[in-house]
Amino acid sequence: MTAGKERSEGIARVERDRKAFQDKALVGLLDVCLTRGKGKLLTSEDVWTVLGKVDWTMERRAMGPVFANAARLSWIKPTGKFVPGKRASRHAAPIRQWRIMINE
Image (cartoon, rainbow, N blue to C red; front, side, top):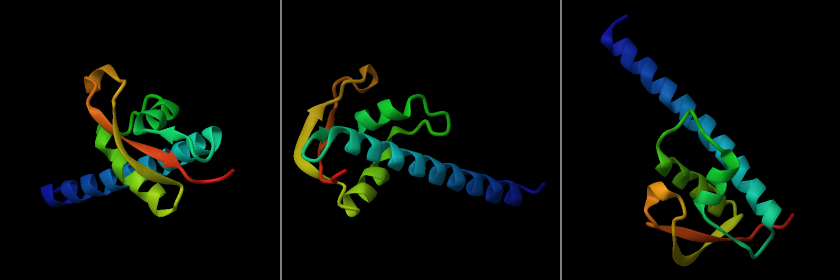
């Protein structure tokens, strides 16, 4: 296999994995929204908790586009606040807080 072909196949694999992650994460976000209810608050950490250990992405920033998509769908909106992260790996770094806008 040529280097160019390996590169193309690698890029295609990453794109498939990204799409699979975003689809599953969006379902997880919807689950959190419907479980908590309209007006309640959430962060990306709540969705990561629902997803559990995700083998197909090590990049935590991959969740950003998922939340942007949910906001475009009017499921959530930013509160304008950032709250300290709870995961030890985040060292209490601030993360965006969102308000659930979707009804059951």
